[in-house]
Amino acid sequence: MLVDSYGRVIDYLRVSVTDRCNMRCLYCLPQGDVRFISHEDLLRYEEIISLSELLVGLGIRKIRITGGEPLIRKNILFLFERLVGLEDLREISLTTNGLLLGDYAEQLRKIGVGRVNVSIDTLQPAMFKTLTGSHRLSQVIGGIRAARGAGLQVKLNVVAMKGINDGEYPHFISFSLENSCDLRFIEVMPRMYNDRFAADRYISSAGILKSLQSSYRLHTLTPPGSAEKERLYQLEGSELRIGFISPISDPFCSKCNRLRLMSDGELKTCLYGEDGVNLRDMLRKGCTDTEIEQAVIETVKAKPERHRIGCDNINLVMHRTGG
Image (cartoon, rainbow, N blue to C red; front, side, top):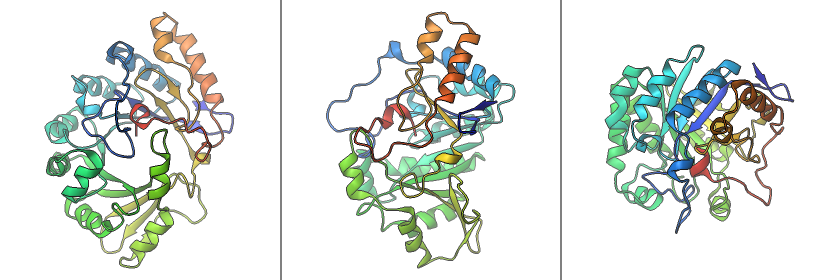
């Protein structure tokens, strides 16, 4: 069991397999030239598998594969096949922008992946092009439907942004109902390249909820006063669950159970924390499993009590860190 110095049990690992993407979302990738990690510096699949096995041995029970966009990495199904077979791992899931999901949905389900989160911030083609630089909204929607048809559980992740998608809440609810997906609204967060954008477009979860409650009856599924990571509601008369992730207005740091393995091997204990130990370097130097395990334990012990959103030095590059 991995436990940090504040008593939080760490059992969830997010693995970024690439910092590249086939979209260019305004709040994620910076405009202009982008410095990507070189192919040689990326974690190889064998290294990801080795580190995942070691971390599962230390107490990790859930792994989510992220990017950049994970499905653009060649032979990605090989990684899923190997991770699904890890003893004591209870769940393997995926976060994707959905562009390639239609090509992979059936195979992912057959391998044993159960859940997929799809990032989709608008259902309007013109706004989708503005936000992502892509005309392929219909391909994303097709991917979502293919995933549901294959039997995957799908959650739609919507980063709420003032003046961009705050008029689309009813559309998201209708789409979620039609496709039997759960829905989650996420507060836009400042990052190294977009702190001004995030400040101008920020909407609190409370503001989103108030807007929804003016038109819908929602029943809370989260006990009042709890510090859960996600505030959950159910739409009356349906099975639709609507969640709110509020890292700015209602931080859930006291319940954080995550580690992040970045695509260059850096192990981060907090989205906004300083970089931790580089496990790729340890592997390539020939360190033993025991040495790597000890480095992980020490890094977890140093996990900060809370995130640093709002500090002047915003140390977060989302396309490298993963969603």
